[in-house]
Each structure stands twice: as structure tokens, then as C-alpha cells.
Image (tube, rainbow, N blue to C red):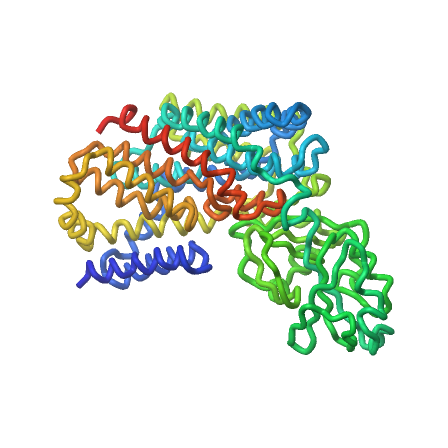
Length: 573
């Protein structure tokens, strides 16, 4: 009975990750709690998994990235590399992005580059941003610390065997695969849209205005009020007493309290101020002017999953949402009632305290470099860079565990006042911690309940008849598919126990399968949802979901082919 109960918990977890919008951290936590209630594991085991050495290393790396993302070298180099032809720019930018992503969290690398590259006058942003995201993914596979996926897999391996993955163990397979992916990007870059093409325009936002009770617009038609021909703004919907009217007829009479939903260039929203009694929250609060700032909502932000109205947006950030844009999707209804999703582009009218808020980096990628600029001085940059490489060198030489080196680097950053302890507390990666610790606990429950033994016993005849290479390919492809359907971290956490068990049951060395899970878990080149960096650039570059498939299929194929060709040779069965 117990194995069946654990099997049901795992199936429900996977179904929730694939088909629901519930946060993965919550789903994993609930599944771990269910395993405790089922009696397969106890709370002492859960707490032990929460302090796994590999997981602690991962958490320290994420916190250290708060300082590393402020290093000045990446922006300095990138600004010098965008002035050549587009292929030359793609090669040089992708190369430098891959190099930095091997040692700095690749999400931080893309966050640093995205705002600046989006505004470069030399090439359309849509021709650069998605290649940069893919280059960051490829670069992150090169080392243990380049991506959270590698560290999560190392955490699981350490939990199983007492020893994690060496720092550069990925390099013999990942580097040729990354270069193959880079070549594929150069071949396919012509299919990327230009910024002026496609249904999603760079400045195409949803904007909401309200008709006041004393407005002179009341009682007149849309046409009579001159609301039909506003150039770069178009009236698409009208919300009246909870009813949605769309399309809006030119002969529609306006009433007090009507909410007018416009679409278009949000920078032209000031035009609407000239209409008597037509206002928005930003106008009422005196925020609307030249202080418009565009941000992208990051995965894991506390406001994700909440409506703009319910999230207390103004008090949190000293900013009012003027416009929303999402993945080319037709947003409808009142602006305040839209449920925010990761990857949404928001146009904010910001108050004087906006730049002083310490919770911005956890919630947003700020695409206005004048607001987001917080690079370190050259002196501090050299000290932090030296500290990072010292921590890595000590780990490789086995003088200090990597976690110890990262801890000292974190203390160095605090001493240099790169951030405060309060900011560190706010940026603590609770979501990653909950996912990985819960996944480790669930994996233990699968083992302790006997479920894995039953599954392996049932599959043993089939496994014995399948060549090891075919099993390796199956584990890799299944991991890749799960990454595209959920997230890289969730896919790696779910697939490691299966890949490891298949190898052990077959009497094979498990390292090739472990690496297949790690490298497959990072191979998100077909959707915006499998990897955070892909989601970050989606609205900034004006990409549709089809753009990811058109540009990414050859990248995914080239990367995967090289990985699967080299894994059995570098890590023999």
C-alpha cells in the first residue's frame, strides 16, 4: 500500500508541475509533506536533506551572485562588441556571455546585459537577446557553478554517494556541445524577427484609464470625444459595471466610471491627460511624466500569481503600473485585475523612492540602465573577481570545500558593503531551497517505501534487453522534454533518481546518466518557460513562442547530438 501511495504523490506532483500554474516550490513542499504523512520518511530526514552540502553550496552561490552581477567587466566588454556586423557581434557577444556564465550565475549575466543590449543602436534587440539567452545557457553547462541545474544534480549525487561532481567534470562534454550550439545559432540567426516585425511591438502595452464622474466625456460617443484617432494608442475595450465591451463601437456613449482599455505605445500615454476627467492611478498620484520605467517580472517574485490590485504594488515599490505586455497574448479587462505572471513586461510610473527600494532586484529585471545601474568600482570589482577565482582555485586544489570558499567570498562582499544583510535576507533563494530539499526528501521516500525497487524489478527484463546507449538517450530526452514542460530545476530534481536507478539496476557506472540529467536539464531551447533567461528576454525582444522553436530547434539538435555522442566516451559505462 505504501509504495502505491508514494507513486500517487509523485504522479500528482508531475501533473501539477506540467498542467497547473501553482508555484513549483509549493508543489514540491506539499509532496514532501505528503511523504511524511505517508510514513515513508520522518521530519528528521527532511531536515537533514535541507542541509545537504551540495544544496548549501547552491544557496551560497546564489547569494554570492548578488555581488557578482554587479561586476563592471561584462557591461564594459559587451558595449565594445556590438559595433561590428551582426554575425561578428553574435560570435563575440555569445563567446563573452558563455565565458562569464561558466563562473557567474547565468541568470545574473543575462539580467546585466539585457537592458543595455535592448537599446543598442547597432542591431535590433530581437536579433541579439535570444542568442544571448541561449549562449548563457550553454555557458552555464561548462562548470559546476555555471547553472543551478548542475549544482542540483551534484547535490543529489552527493546525497547518494557522499561525493559530488568535480568542478570541471562537465567541460569535456559541455564545451564541444556549447560550440556546436553556437554554430547552430549563427546558421539560424536569420529566422529571428526584426524589432519592427511580428504581432508584438516593442512598446505595445495594455493601458487603462478611468472616466471620472464630472468628466465632460460623459454622455458623448467615443467618436465625438476624439478617442478613436490617437495615433499610437488604440481603444480596444471598455469595462462598464463588470461587463466587457469589445470591440468598442465609435457610437458607444461613455458613462461615468467607465474604464477605457487602450493598447499601443505606452510612452504616448501622456496624450490621454488632455481629455477632461480621464485619469489613471499614476496621473492621480502625480507619478506620470518623464519617469516611466520598464521592468520584466522575474520568476519567484512575491507578486507573481497576484493581481496588481491585491499585490499592494504602490506601497511595495513606490510605483504605479501604467501598462502591461505579455507574450503577444491578448490581455483583457481591468488592469488592476490582471494576475501577474513571470516574464510580464510592466511599464511603471515611478516615485522618488523607487530607486531606493531594496526589493527591486528580487522582483524585476529593470531594462532602464539609468535606474538599474549599480556596477562596482574598478577597485572593488578587482577584489571581488580575485575572491571568486581564489574560492574556485581552492576548491579545485581540494584545499577548501567550495561552500567554504563561497562563504568567505560572501563575507568579503558584506565587508565591502556591496549589499546589506537585509538585502541578503530578501534575496535568499527560498524557492530553490524548498524545491531541492523537498525533492531530496521525496527521492528518499521513493527509495524507503520500496517503490523504486518495485519499478526497477518490473522494468528489469526490458532494461536488460535495451542497449546502454539507448537507455542513456532515453534518460536524456525525457529530461529535456520535462525541462521544456516545467523548469530546468524541477526536471533535474525529478529525473535524477530515475536516471541513477536505471544505471545501477543495469550494473552500469551511473556518471554518464548523471551527466545526461544535468546537461539535458539545461537544454531549454524550444520554449520560453523551461529556463529563466529565456523568459526574461521574451518581451524585451518581442518574441513569440514560435520564434523559440524556429530559432532553437537546430541549437537543441546540435547540442543534444554532441552531448549524446561524447557522454559514453568521456564517462564509459
